[in-house]
Image (tube, rainbow, N blue to C red):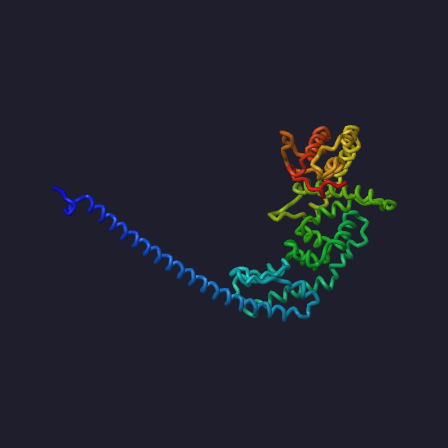
Length: 362
């Protein structure tokens, strides 16, 4: 018979099972601790190796930069050309030049500084120096080629360049590339400027809006300024809507002079239609009745400001009061009932439709 002292008693099996379990858990913990220790050692070795590589690359790149600075010291535009940033945490992007042309010219040596011989650095930097000297010699940033133009787009482009564009902003454009410098060298400054402006955010649409919406010579009051601001907002939307039809080449898209002329002509006609429809909508009897209704909105925009959003119609589809519509198309096709319904919703719930007060020009 089995007794508690018998080796075959179940209680002894439970004791052995418990002991084995404890042994297993101890071994498992020991293995986990060992694995964690090994991983930490490997990570530490990787970090040390990575930091060593960064230090070597950084030392080499500082030498490259110093050599470039020395070569560029007589260049009048050296500060623009040599503007750069350092990122000592990035193994592959330790040094980045702000000027697109300088960055692209030096990119292979920056990514593999071990190949940056003095001869290679000198050759590339001399090219950069020559290009920037040409900009200086031709007084490119005076924009003399468009300063006295009677063409309204070129007049607007000159106004934009004088008031909104700095040399460093233009040269940071992705389109201020080798082709840009070649056009400058070939005495084609306007074509060069247009190419570079393709890479400056909102530049071409701002120029278009300046060209089609100007105050009358005898109007300088706040009402005239507000009206011009609304028309410029509408012109900007028209350009955004139409430009995709005229862009060429791979991304990032751009317009050459021919594309630009065609786009500008199309946008002029489109703006004329949109402007007339927007003015008719605001002046309509139903819109005046809309303004006389009791205020029941969220208090963020007024009824007048909601109505004025006709000059800043969204060009994408959105759901309003259970209906899917594109506000731009409603203006284009004179669907004024849809617009008033939409503007009522904008007035009541502006945050829901991502309406900002600056969009609703009074």
